[in-house]
Length: 224
Image (tube, rainbow, N blue to C red; front, side):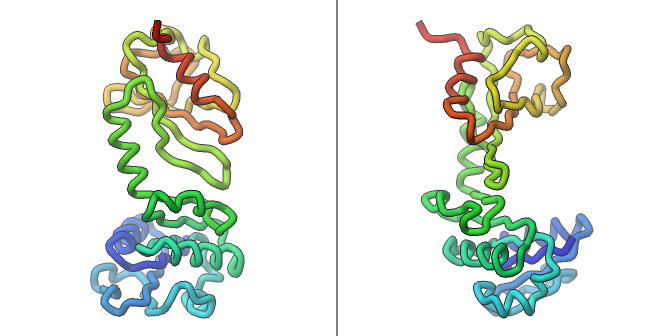
């Protein structure tokens, strides 16, 4: 795939190196000359330009791109780049870096963002995941699919422990996609049984209403 990354700072360069290792074609754009450290990602194409400019994006080959990543340290710039990528160049997949969690409400399809990536939210989720048992932790949101990924660690007194996957019916719009046990993930099968400490990974529709409360009540013992 051809991928254009706007923002050649440490985040943009790190992502570019990973994508190149996976065999993709990468172009890095940045308006700051000191960010064009070509030797650090020698196999990428480099463009010195303002990615908020449609002309600059066109010259960078955006019309041939499959994915655009707006990875600058400025949320306003990332939103402008995302909107241009989607509306002016019809990019199929636009990923945007979210720097300030307070701006999360803006990072949606209205601004051309298919997938917002928030480092602060991811770090918060990982911390919460490490200490939370019996509470759903939001890991990731898919704007285009109107769904989110949640992790849930089964407490030792969960009423579903010992039951098979087939015997537990979760609320509508909730999909159990994986189970992590003893540090290893596996796809749940009908005959598998739930165990204490299992980390359940769910995909949950944003249209599910009060589904998180219903899910928590199902897998935890109510307080007296």
